[in-house]
Amino acid sequence: MVSFEWVSGQVRARDPRVKGEKMGKGKAGKSKTVCSCCGVTEADIKRAIADGATTYKQVKKATGAGSKCGDCKDDVKKIIKRELAKMSEPEDKGDAVKKEEPSKKKDRFKFELEPLEGEFTVCKVQDPSAIDLSVPFTFVAKTDTELSLVCPTGKVPAETVAREDGWRALRVAGILEFSLIGVLEAITHDLAKRGVSCFAVSTYDTDYVLVKSEDFDRVFAEE
Ligand code: FES
Image 1 (tube, rainbow, N blue to C red):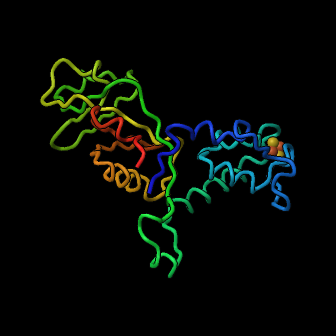
Image 2: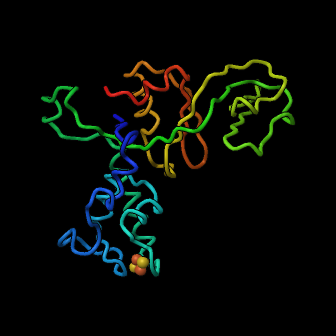
């Protein structure tokens, strides 16, 4: 299940300096040091990931790892990949899971969603030259039967075959490894629990979820 706690505080909370925690030197006791320049341990990195960091850049910002010679970069990335893969797997607690009420299960997934500015339109067009690919957040899909476009409402071509306005878009923060499973499943599951239907678009780096504007506030509502 996706946690949406980040909406009001995840970005702030995942920065240890905001929380008053000190990562790096001495914090994790006997944990293996990954970044010797900055004294950042594996435990520090895991904690940053648990707090919401999903990319090397975010871990670097949260812990300081890699801010000097950069020799630790590959090791840090390996830890991120491993920890994110673990987070995307359902917890296996054996009998303990069977005895646990569904409502008491812990969150199994944790992804940060970034709301994009403005409204979006989902439409079908006939003329590909009418699509302005210089506009950020323009998604085009061409199949044997249609040419679909998702883009900011103000940038929809003058002529469309069909269109539906009134969507808000959310980006899954960070770069998702292809091996990371269950991202969309987790997000759509959580949205469904809030009675919010959605439309998903994937790019090479990450996933985007579109919800109707009238449902937008419910995406972030407390359960
Ligand atoms: S070992 Fe991490 S920056 Fe040098």
